[in-house]
Length: 335
Image (cartoon, rainbow, N blue to C red; front, side, top):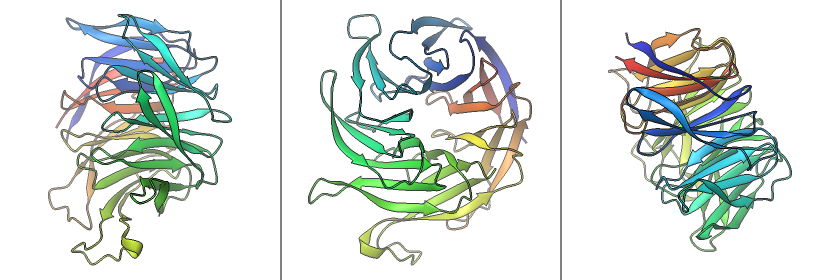
């Protein structure tokens, strides 16, 4: 069995901390919360400290932040219905663009692998796709409304321009651009959760997706492409996503976030029972019937709800978490 070792506990935000995001180089991270501020932290020696506070971009809670793949831009999604784009082009971070259009709270933001597309989603039930049109210019490429409730999360596929979204309507949806007419369409709806889907994340090659829910389970979904060897039917030559594993019984409350490590294959969850849990695929796992086991759990990882967890993209086994308790924690998993 593994262990979760606490390396650092960091404070600075006032009130609950909603989101944390590692810079692609893994040596810097950003955090955001209900104090309407973004903090950018870096490591000096063995000490993490706030290097920059960005507090003039939003009028309400900042729900989520994400770095662009190049690491030059930071996007922040806020309850003030806007998404801000920050960059350091002048030497200091400043807000260079504000994306408007959602009717109310923006819940999540995600950059595509190329950095050329940005997705946002909102309590207004819509998913927006934005094209990076030039320096600090963003154009709306699509407004997608297949969800029937609040959309909680958007995440891009790690290698393709395919977008996944998770919603209060208990479903996950996949979107892709039609090559013929360049229109964005919903290509798949993933149904199995019995309550709100809070978080989703792809594995390293994007052939599987993990989801977490208010129903206290995590689920593993697998992509079956046209002509797959498993014999799964693919109507209209569209990729079909099937739920191939449900992990239940470990979480006692809603699971608010899930992160699938691209380096180790480990899955981390952030739960409303104040815990962080780590799962690993078993050695006898089968491709179409995978099995996962919990290798370690930190039951009282935080004093209140854990809102977000994210694996460091460069340092294998390093995990960051944040909570309603106003702290950020950095952990190391030893297997």
